[in-house]
Every structure is written in structure tokens, then in C-alpha cells.
Image 1 (cartoon, rainbow, N blue to C red):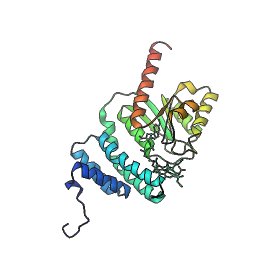
Image 2: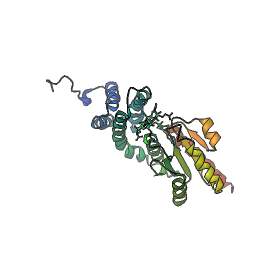
Image 3: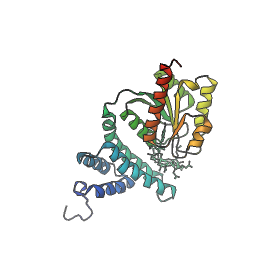
Image 4: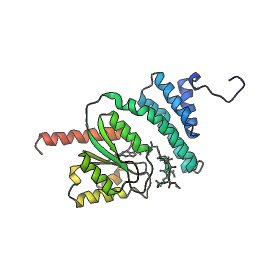
Length: 235
Ligand code: B1M
């Protein structure tokens, strides 16, 4: 409207301006604007993966930095997370629509004591997009939840996510329990989350640490290929 200087018409912005505006809107937790922005970029021919990484994930990274530095607080970050989820809900079916052949099955969840789920949800979406069947256990999962689901679903992969330095050691509890039950080698165990690194993954006995969703997909494909080769060789 001409009498409202503040109103920004998202569809009139260039791609670069729109992405910048979406980062601001994500920061401000404006879910409807994020959904509109995602739809505009898709209509302009953007690949769903680019919308996800260049607008949403990049925007959430800024939120993360300001949360760390005490500029944003939990309520604001929750709003930003909610806005991000709105955008992700639009992208999810598109990312899964690749018609990729079935690759294998993964059970994934955030570990006990931890309620962060955005990264895990992203991994799930990307894995589904790459042709994996994904059973999402949600947040705050005790070892029993992982192991029951993995057995019930006849999963190939157990995926664990942790965002807190206080919850990441729980991944070792899950792996140690698998060892105690003699089922460690029945599954490929992949772990991820911002505070982890490769060394930690090795130290707790995971098969691999996955830096991000794209790396998770590549790592999972690689391990599934090895598993099939072993089976073909009668191993
Ligand atoms: Co939280 N939080 N938070 N938080 N939060 C962090 C993690 C923190 C680093 C912020 C900070 O201080 N800088 C800090 C942890 C510090 C530490 O442990 N050393 C922190 C804290 C302290 C807390 C609380 C304790 C705050 C409080 O209450 N005082 C509390 C904890 C509650 C609990 O869990 N018990 C808390 C709460 C929250 C909110 C609820 C407000 C919200 C979560 C909303 C939600 O998830 N639904 C929230 C958020 C949003 C964040 C930040 C800002 C963003 C996390 C995120 O979504 N990133 C985060 C700061 C940060 O990470 N920079 C922070 C975007 C996402 C795409 O990235 O999750 O890293 P990420 O996932 C990536 C990879 O890591 C990887 O792939 C993903 C996609 O590429 N990956 C996997 C992740 N999981 C994987 C699993 C795999 C493979 C790859 O399996 C195979």
C-alpha cells in the first residue's frame, strides 16, 4: 500500500533481496512470510534443496549465532524455529519427490534429554528425498526406544541427533547397550549434531559422524552399498 512505507511486497523483490528478506523474517519468526517466500522462490524455478540451504538453513545459522551471543533468547528462537518448520513443511514433499529407488531404512531420533529437532528433521527430509525410508522417533529418545524401533522396523541404519554437550554422551549409552545385547553389527550407526565431530563419533563407536544432511545421505548410501556388497560376497 502506498500509505504504508513499511510494507514489503515479497513477490516484487529480486531473488537476492527476497533471500535477504527471508533471513530477516526467519529471525523475526514470521512463519507466514517464510511460507510465502518459499513459494515465490519455488515458482521462480528454484530447486527445493537450494531454497532449503540458501534461505532457511542460512537464516537459522544467523539465529544460532545471536542465540549463542545472548542477543536472542529462547522465545524468539522458538518463533524462528516455528517459521523454519513452516518453510520445511512446503519443501518436504518436493524433496521426497525425486522418485529415487528404495535405498534402505533408517530409524532416527534426538537422544534422551534433548528437544532440538530441526536438524534431525532436515536429515529425515533429505534421506527421504534420496530414496531412504525414514522412521522418525522424534525427540528425547531413551535407548529402548531406538532399539525397539530398529528391531520392529528391520532398519538398516540407526541415526542419532544431539545438540547439547550434555546430551551427546547418551549416544555412547545406546551403542554400548547394542554391544551388550550383541546387536551392534546388525545396524549402521550414524550420529550428528552441531557439537559433535569425527573424533567423538569414533570414540563412542559409531560407524560415522555426519556433519550435515547432505553428508548423511552420502554416508548412508556408501554404507548401504558396502552392506550389499558384503551380502553378495556371502559375508
Ligand atoms: Co538450543 N542450544 N537450547 N534451542 N539451540 C543450541 C544447540 C546452542 C548451541 C545455542 C548456543 O548457546 N549457542 C546451546 C547448546 C550449548 C551446548 O550444549 N554447549 C543451546 C542451549 C543451551 C539450549 C537450552 C539449554 C537453552 C535453555 O533452555 N537455557 C535449551 C535445551 C533444551 C533441551 O534440549 N533440553 C535449548 C532450547 C532450544 C529451543 C527449544 C529454543 C530451540 C529448539 C527448537 C527445535 O529444535 N524445535 C533451540 C534452537 C533452535 C537452537 C539453535 C539456535 C539452533 C539449532 C538448529 O536448529 N540449527 C542452536 C544454536 C546452533 O546450533 N547454532 C541451539 C539448525 C539445524 C539445521 O542445524 O541442528 O546443527 P543442526 O543440524 C545439522 C547438523 O548438525 C546435522 O545435520 C543437520 C542439517 O544439516 N545433524 C545430523 C543434526 N542431527 C543429525 C543427526 C544425524 C546426522 C546429521 O543422524 C544421522
